[in-house]
Length: 396
Ligand code: NHW
Ligand code: EN5
Image 1 (cartoon, helix red, strand yellow):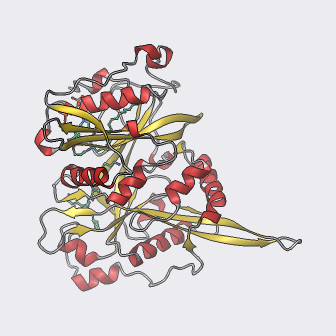
Image 2 (tube, rainbow, N blue to C red; image 1 turned 180 degrees about the horizontal axis):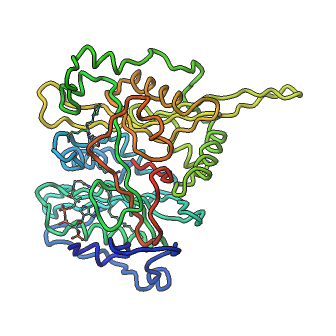
Image 3 (tube, rainbow, N blue to C red; image 1 turned 90 degrees about the horizontal axis):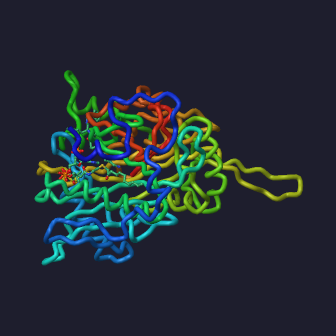
């Protein structure tokens, strides 16, 4: 029943695996000459292209393709609206390659009608400490070109382009069930502007609750609990990275390994894109030199959604939990500060997945489970499934 996926090196639904961590198909690595040099043939009338993300016009075209055709919720009420600045950030981490920003255009008009991207990442997968893989994201086909088996062509082409660079594994997430998730995590939501969420159909007034009571239920303090939380700066990055790496290594079994420059790329604050905050402890040594140690990290990214039907609201501003680590305070107090910082930055809702330690604070902090789940996949790797808490990867 999966015409494409049953032909791919991914675990099938019925497979069981006990001690079997490793690649499923070793052929492309052992025989690089078998990887085709030329792109896969495309439907007649269409051509492959590479987008130039440093060019304003290419970013704008990608932005518009996604704004009109990318992921929607099950009831088609909301559609992700990744901003141009966000897309540039997401597609240009250290080591990014233009050949991995793959578009499809109508040959006659040059209109961009499909896209898929890969970016490099080093992953730990259980006992394998540093596997060079790609993260595949932003697979999108224009609504008028759906159900023509174009997705498998895009996936085969990005696979070929990864193989050409000596990469044989990929990680990707999707709301759709495919063979076969490594782990599945539910989305949870925390209202920040309860009235707006109700007005645009994101949430509903609970029985026997008035709007006033609902707004009061979700009220938050005006200022963070910890007055010393401050935006992450370059000088904090070495210490913040050490804090996060230590956390991921000890608490999770599947996580990215950030180099110094990768950490700076993914975490240094960018308006309306990525928000990161730290608490630091100042240590003054006997010789009078002082150094700062990051004890806590808060981060969330901005991913608005278009509201498809409302006359009153055009966009929903959502903050998505990224990586958060607490050592000087409880995780719950840290996440409460994340909510306050997100609210003060103008977000309407704070979203988080059931992974790492997040589940432990959802009830107390008044998150509610959403109707969406996120499945995590690894291409060409066999391993047994993870518990949600062991998942240390947050994708954009
Ligand atoms: S998940 C978001 C994906 N994008 C969207 O949902 C946007 C809206 N939808 C669309 O644009 C994040 C289309 O519906 C898409 C499918 C393009 C989704 N992943 O062309 P056909 C990502 O970007 C399979 C993988 O007729 P379509 C992650 C489907 O099961 N496969 O469908 C991307 C079927 O195969 P089957 C998906 O609706 C990861 C076949 O496509 C899929 O016109 C990619 C049907 O194709 C999905 N999200 O277009 C994998 N959705 O076997 C990377 C459907 O069941 C793998 N399908 O018959 C790794 C590669 C790199 C390896 C490196 C060594
Ligand atoms: C690749 N990196 O379904 C990403 N979102 O729960 C692709 N639901 O927002 C994968 N349906 O439950 C994307 N409100 C997979 C997710 C696709 C988007 C998606 C879900 C996640 C979502 C909301 C709105 C539902 C609208 C109707 C939801 C109910 C909970 C409510 C929140 C506020 C407080 C009260 C309860």
